[in-house]
Length: 81
Image 1 (cartoon, rainbow, N blue to C red):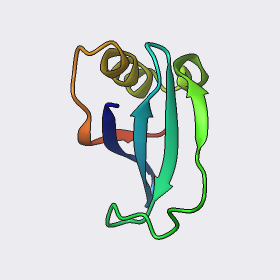
Image 2: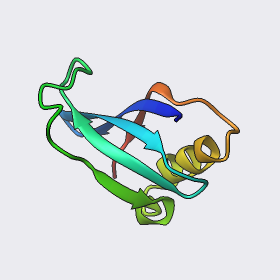
Image 3: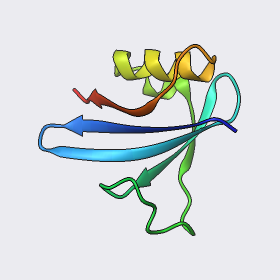
Image 4: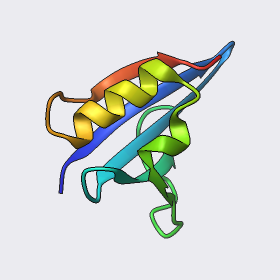
């Protein structure tokens, strides 16, 4: 299973996430600690369809390309509007 580590920046806040590919349009997303570690491995994240993040075009396009195998997403950040 392909994974990606990304971070979303919203003003002064930065959230890190691990993404795991499910298929060409779905992924599993889990919130991580600021250093990228998972202090709560027993908790679950959520399954999303790539269209659910369509309100942030750069993030949407990057995740869609990643799901289709056209790019890598390791330690890549995106601004949240």
